[in-house]
Length: 340
Ligand code: TYM
Image (cartoon, rainbow, N blue to C red; front, side, top):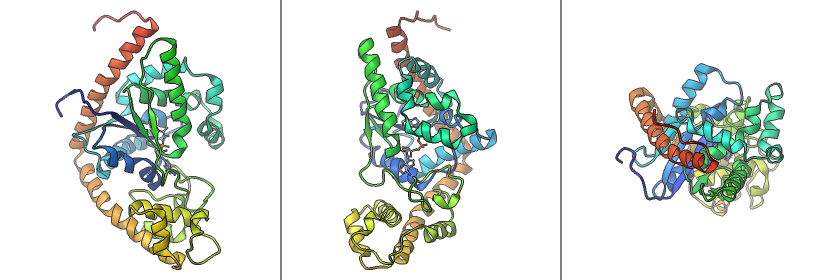
């Protein structure tokens, strides 16, 4: 694609916070669909580092993780010639539009956000204004690019609904300015659960690493974590197993990785033991993650390649974002700035 070429495909946009270890839940709920949909859309994929600092991060780790996550997007199969990949902090328009959208977001709306409530309980000592206003930044991420579709896991649905409300509110106050985006939440795998605590979702920043599979876990670790995954007191798989939280979660992961319907998977394992399911699932995960990790290692060794992709991505993103931001300034009544 030539530099700054305008595209004609609809826009698909999504992002992941560089915290913890990119995990199987993120892949199944989000990244997998980015890869699958990239043919039909112009994809904009971000590593959202501005979001990550709502929780304290160690600077050296954050720096490394941003590069590592971007490399994992590539290793998963995002084509950098057809899409853009960038780090959110390289595009200052995100923070600028977030401020403006804060002025169009009600505290009552932010008070209802379940992610804010959850994180306030988890990080009691640091309930900062950024954590609270986070959804307005996420709305800015999306609205800056006139996005059509946002593929995310089920936990982001509420933020997407608020983004749509903010866009409609701005459009109604002034005149149509933002495209009102649609969420894309997959039917299967939108909420992968923790392996040890089936009441909560699998989280990449969980303090217990047995709760999640990192996309960079070596085969022996993957096998161990799956072997230890919580099931229930029955021993073999039946048509009811899908309703059992732990076993249902393992069946769902298996079905998504093998591109099979959940009914086919239940039939396949019918009357087999839980350890048969765990062994086959671990094999499938290792077979999927080994080539992914090889591609990742190659990309990480070529630092210049990754930096170039991120620089190009940020340049294109700044160009697209500045067009929307200029329009927003005009609608608001800001005096146009002279050229630098
Ligand atoms: P984050 O970083 O928590 O998660 C990244 C993506 O992974 C999905 N996900 C899951 N899907 C299924 N099962 C799970 N257990 C699971 N855990 C996480 C999330 O739904 C998400 O799609 N606020 C966002 C990041 C963001 C963003 C955006 C997303 C910032 N700006 C603009 C889309 C568009 C977040 O915290 O995701």
